[in-house]
Length: 341
Image (cartoon, rainbow, N blue to C red; front, side, top):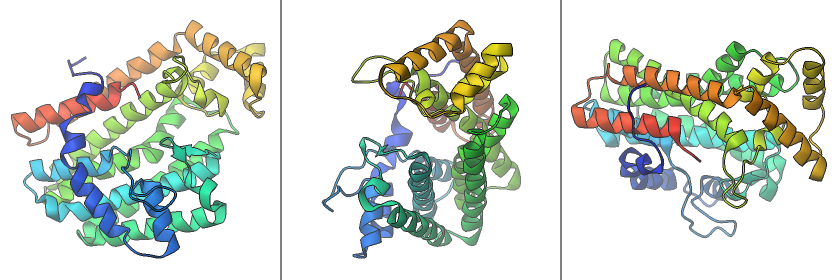
């Protein structure tokens, strides 16, 4: 595998260089006194529950990619900014609805929007954010808006598949198809929007889409690994949060594939009932993690991350970046695939 910088140190210049510009763009896009606007500013992280200015914990990954790619391919960041803001709004829309569907009560360390205003108003807020995303993208170009609309359609289809997977058997190929939509769509779109703003030709645009697809797979599989083996900053041990929620993430899909007979039937029964609380939940979690470890499932997932990381790095080298820009992109890709939180 290619040598890439690992760890938090590379949550670096691409993720910080454009932060202030994106935040100002979001403030402008979400300006207004209507109650739903305040809810959206809270969800994005611009305000606290009392409507007071707050410092958003968001990384602004997707809009940063848009602006970086646009600038490094000869475009104007000011022209690309509406597209960058639009993709963050579309991402925010998806998170509002995801939290409702998954009944997640916390988002980025704060109460999820629906727990504050109720499900009905949270749905309205999400719908408004979707509309604002398209309106904002149109300020860049019709091509940018169409790119974002296609990604939104794929993302919603992916979310539908993810929910359906909770009630059916899933293959690894089927899972990859799902994450190509649910996670990959907006990441592909971020790279493509940068190219649209820079006016690149179809060959470069295709390379950007392929790069985004490989990054999306590496990013989501790493997220799956962290959802089971990630370190809890408070407890200092694996959280196993995805198992507690009975999510069919890649490690679990691979576990089902490697389990047969009575063990498979017992595992299928376990995943079809609600997660218990207290000591029973802890015992079930420990047993499933032990089974994953015995079958070296984490190693298999890490090998897949390596494969898609290498593919992403090869795709990045197809782009007409200068040496400095290529290094920054490779570091960002390495961070996304190897982050520990």
